[in-house]
Image 1 (tube, rainbow, N blue to C red):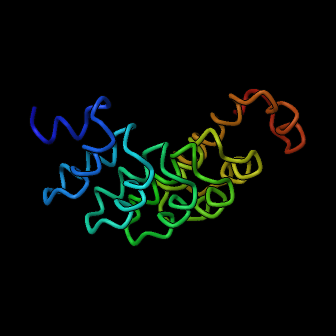
Image 2 (cartoon, one colour):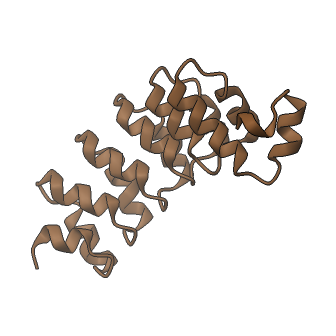
Length: 160
């Protein structure tokens, strides 16, 4: 089995994933960061990787600790912000901050996140980007509390 195959295999032992996380090849570290079996300590280390693609996968991994996601929300690469916005493990206060990001894809990631607060989704229904608005309305429409929330904001069922 190649090191790439080992890195992406959920059956790879945590000990081996620790070793693979130190590989010189970014593609190996990328798949280690993606792997749902990767220990949190390794995700913490990989969150500081010099390659943005590796940090993307750390931000996407639902086992990444919330404090690391909070840190990654301030990453220099906007694509890392997108994956933090998308990750259901991201703390709500971080999602609120990311809902104001300059990149529409990041705001859409917040709108598609099942952990996004209702109030944030309501604000995103007024975004200047149609894809963000559509995602926010769809998210609100799928929530049990939506009719009560939306009536208070002047929405009707046909607009979600």
